[in-house]
Length: 113
Length: 112
Image (cartoon, rainbow over the protein chains, first blue to last red):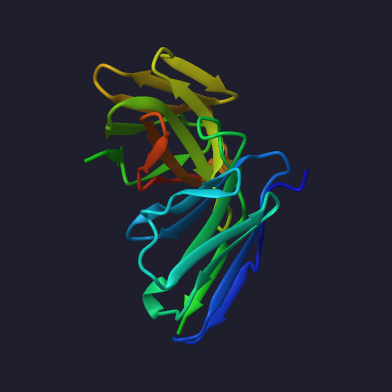
């Protein structure tokens, strides 16, 4: 298994532009998570899905952020419009169930200038 | 408010030495505690998951302990190697929905 696959690995964009991050979870995993990591705040959960349904999006910073999971093998995190304070590493993770260990992707490093 | 505090913030040790990383938490109701290793530029990788009834769990040269009474956990690394240089993150899961609370991590540098 190739693990959790995220794309792109790096993204540099101008303030105000739309950014879309992509994630392919491990086949058979029912739970998918989006995290954001910064030096100041560490890892923060943004949203998670169970069986493609959003369960908890309380970590999503504001309306500029949205996430979708149209099927069991694909999810997107969209930021529109992007701002410099959104600069961070965004991780996607998946697991068999909430109580199981998570497998993280390699992350997308987003820089908004 | 659920919190996870890790100490020290960073640590430098010589190759071959042992070290212990600490994690204190105020998370309720406790479900499980996880230690992750994160190499620079990579995603976190799970080392151990411990439930309420487990006091010790080992994964190779890594040994995690859990004291649910004092709400403390430690990660002991034996005979450190250069490849152990990474950030070690303590994560505590709470409640039926297993909501996770993350520590900010401990940066370990192993020098030759």
